[in-house]
Amino acid sequence: MRYVLAVLVALSVSCTLARVASADQQRDPALKDLLQKIIGSSDCFTEKYESEVWYKSMEPRLARFVPTHEARVEILNHVYCEAKRDPNLQIPPDLVLALMEVESRFDRWAVSPAGAVGLMQVMPFWPRELGVQNQLVKVEPNIRMGCEILRYYLRMEHRNWAQALARYNGSVGHNKYPALVMQRWERAWRF
Figure 1 (cartoon, rainbow, N blue to C red):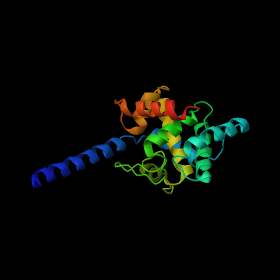
Figure 2: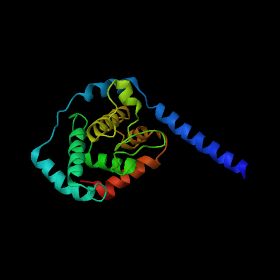
Figure 3: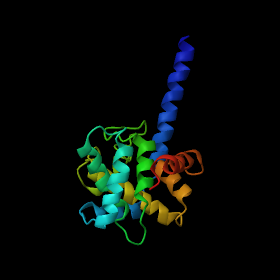
Figure 4: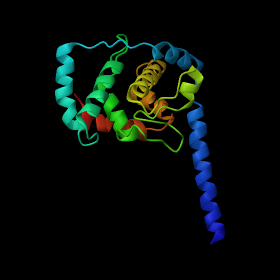
């Protein structure tokens, strides 16, 4: 019995270490430079009509995960703004919502076994490397970093969504995670 318990503990530790090692491979100097540029920026590229339609369409869908109207509006506002921040490579905001559902089920306090934090499950080494306070449980910085990381991987993967999502999740070469995000996007969030 002790032997079985020892084997189970060893397997659990090795799986956790593998996840952490995989996440650690996501450190990229070019991404660090890009994230450093957007940390202080707060421009929002929205069109009034489109954003109003966005709120009316998405808030009821988000209500089953996020209990208060104020929290839903905060998330929706930052998702919309950050997804559209770069006019050369905009991310569908509803895809960001699908990613958040898969990553954290909209729990800003979520922490993965690999140590990723918040709504978009950003690795905590990013704030440290960028020299900013670790505020990943706060909605705005988490969404800002998460969207910029996804956008960076979209560029790296020549706008291949599946490969960029796999990089985002640290599961390069595997299709399960990208398929799950795309499925949630199509079935629950597509705008």
